[in-house]
Image 1 (cartoon, chains in turn red, green):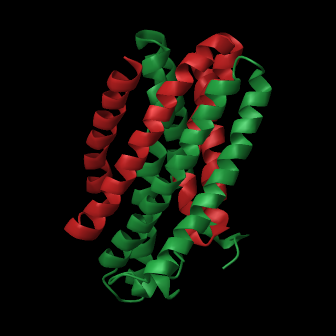
Image 2: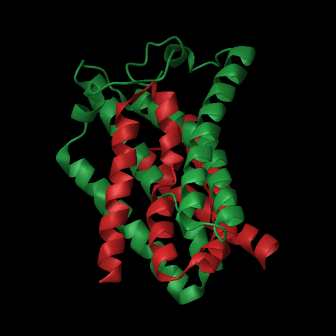
Length: 112
Length: 160
């Protein structure tokens, strides 16, 4: 049941941010919504409720590592698209490797 | 150019694309919770910034721009790639704001859950706006690069 609530809450928050991003102009501003804290908001709201504040506080430093990895992933996508002329699907799929590498690397170095 | 809303943007997407985003968002939220349960909060926390939505958005933007050009009898693949690249650059700057969101939650979570999420959301919005402004400032300073001239001049139908 908890996962069903998570699914609906996450879907709603992500959709709300996506609709905002679709409507905002210029598109260079709307691009910022590609890194909106939509999944984080839905997840943390439910985690506060189910696990409590100390658990959320211990998730947050890892989230910062994940955000830095997202920046690396987005830069890799941008470079692949502009320099190698791959499709967006191929570029984003390849850049996920960068996200995993940077995220887990930073977690290992900074958080142990 | 001032930031503004354009309701026409909603009509560009199909219902199936909105459904895909809903399912991806739900799946990413379930994934973050499940990994935190299995591997602990320090691993689960990483997935609060998992780029599932970013990847889907970049792919959809490329498709929309390509179709727009193809409807005018042009190939459109290059414009689609440029539009997706511009969106990716925006997401890279937006990641700084996402990191500040995480720092706010980290510092405030144990004081007040509601306050931490509200403060973190406001800080995210302020930092995201500041990043957009900084990005524009840096682009004006260095001038438009080759290949971005059409977009920077506003000839890109959506992306500037």
